[in-house]
Length: 262
Image (cartoon, rainbow, N blue to C red; front, side):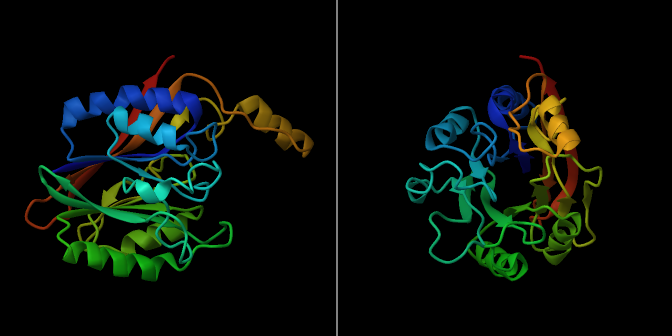
């Protein structure tokens, strides 16, 4: 079994590059599941229901979100009807939607859990560590052969800590939110694949997906300004995890990076 996870999709360049990359990756690796963080798909902030449907039509199985989950007003009233779109599991009780799902695949059941960190993030999430341990145990008891966790967080230390917290329980704990792929893909001693941040699907030469000239203007002047999504070329980044059939833990993890012109 192989699992593919791709990082935060940023704007139209990120979406269009994603739609080219996913069929290629499916043909090359035959993954049981393709999971994508759609956090910034709609103009760089959040995602809409119709964009979720567009993701699914182009080969994405599960969409995870993060701290921008509610930036597009239509999502909150729709997300309860779509189990394939996950907002962070550890949001306050009563929040629309769900934070985990168990998917039947030809290779067996796969659990996906979406979490949001608390360090340097907006107030709101409950403790992700206690929430993660309980939900991973529940998904395993429900028959999950493999289990992928998206930890959406600002702090490197918090995302690494989550991987160690779930080592030997989750198949993979993969970080999102900071948009810059880290060079620390590895399998921890207990068998959990970990990567602090898988990177993004978006403008390669911008600043975390935004137009570099606009961001620099803000840095130089300290004045309020808009940061539009950057342009092409676009890079698709993520990771592919090979799952051990006997244990449901990871055999290997490999970074993904693909560049596309318009």
